[in-house]
Length: 565
Image 1 (cartoon, rainbow, N blue to C red):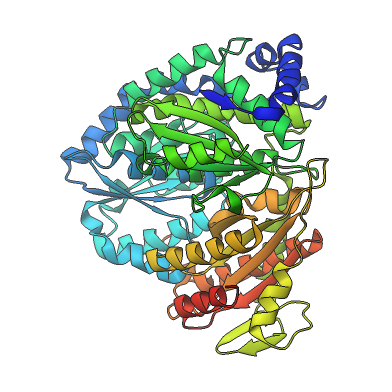
Image 2 (spheres, helix red, strand yellow):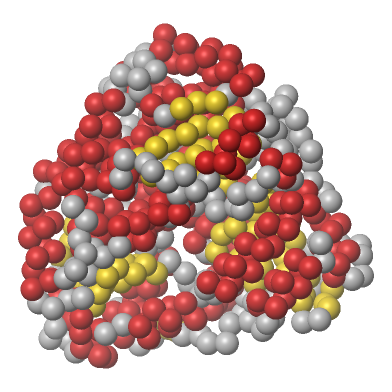
């Protein structure tokens, strides 16, 4: 790992000396909750990830025997239903490593958009599909809704005599999902170490079982992580995780709080996992480090002084070298990390987990809870209760409607072009003395697709280049289990743009697996989550505007981007 810190070098040096003198690394490995708080709540029972590599190795034989059994029975596909920590690491494994011949092709469902659910269903051959229900708590509303829907569909297609062979669960002991999976006679229930939070679970059963199903050499991956674990115990600058965490925290509390990832194309999917890890761990108590993933890699002129760049690349890949050299020459701080091959991800997962909790120590925050995620869920549940009591969700009144786009918010202008520009002109330029520069968060409660992702990328790039602001994009409700905590818990410098759209298809969510009764649909759930997210942001005094894109989602996204140029 190579650091280019420039004038920030002393800030880091001073902080790292305090880390060494305070024996912070040793205390973390000794499970000393006072590293972060005098209160052990949600700390003492959240440090199991330190042992995940060895614990997963200990049960790997059983995992591989299970994988062999489903392969021998002709399963060719797996659909993992989860959110956040349960789904992001498996997605990284699938997209980075691919699928080994003869193994199961893994797909991940983490969208409540009914069109997205139906799209997954229409691709399935139920007779060859293994359904993986993955949730720590066993009560995640999205995951349990997916379970209920696909269990009923599989029951219709496969029949009650064989359906149990097609479902497995990954959860904590004693969770609601464990009880339900037992009652439905699931093929297998993997019980994870309960002393691990979701975002720290990549090397636990939540990540390793899906990795083994797609054919990854899990032993090689975990041995790589064990090698990193030895390094992560060092109380010196040979500990790259400690160095990384000290840099992130020290520069973050001094105004460079936008960690911007530049990654080799082959490993770019790692960004979504580390985005959740950093945002949900550090974004609270009026503080936070904003991870910026998949932003355009452009010229130095389009970035501001609040950036810390992380350049992760595979050995031999020089695709972005010249652009990174320009950033360094322009005075930007850069950390370079080189992976020998993709199996180095085993160590990288552990490195970033430790680095993140070290950054929490620097920022004087507790990195294992997510108080604002819970508050947003409470608001969404209140919206759902309104629906069940009154038969409809709360209705908003549009402030402006033009060319098929509706705008919701406190606005004074009367045309679409001025609305977008006026909202974005609310940004703060910030400084490096504790006054944060704004960022733009684009929250897309629309059906995920390549076309939508491209249109959103175009929009964020236009904003980035015009205002030199860090930009993030997330599909809802997926991001609620990732960056959502930071959005409500940080210093309040975000400009939040929510997009909703017409949903041409809808499907009911059964009240219980195997039963037909339903109280609401996926479209209602998704709308409630968008409304709840909106209200939680407003309750936390965030700058917020909502656009309903109607039926022409891509065209209207491009139209809005055109108003900025």
